[in-house]
Length: 188
Image (cartoon, rainbow, N blue to C red):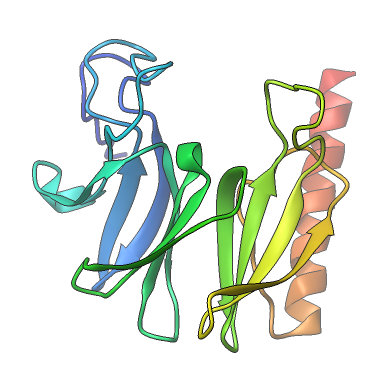
């Protein structure tokens, strides 16, 4: 099995998400750090998006804990700049078009019919009045305005998926439930 290693130290770059851009596998990372977890309290503007095959040439730099690479059918690239709470919209040539702050840790993107769905995780450092539960936020990508926020019964969202087919959706729900049941039994 082939394994890619970008640094000598484990979890030094904190590679977070994968996505396909221009038919190339790309990834986001918190930064080019040399020590394990070197990104802790040191990740502002150090993050990047790169191609797996061109790891020395970033497509995007200056990001803060980037997640969720999404190339949508509207011809734009969307990316969560999670530490800042921003969603960024780029052209497919990596030119920044818009930035929108959603007021929390953004992670997880899905797009359908001109609506961008964004995951908003609860704060891991719970402070009174801050986000206590995760939410899914919907935006109109033409006007860049918020449509709605829906509270979901969990603390964190890692990714969002949209299914066109009910049977496909039910198949994946079943697979997830089987996996979680197996994990629970293993812990017992």
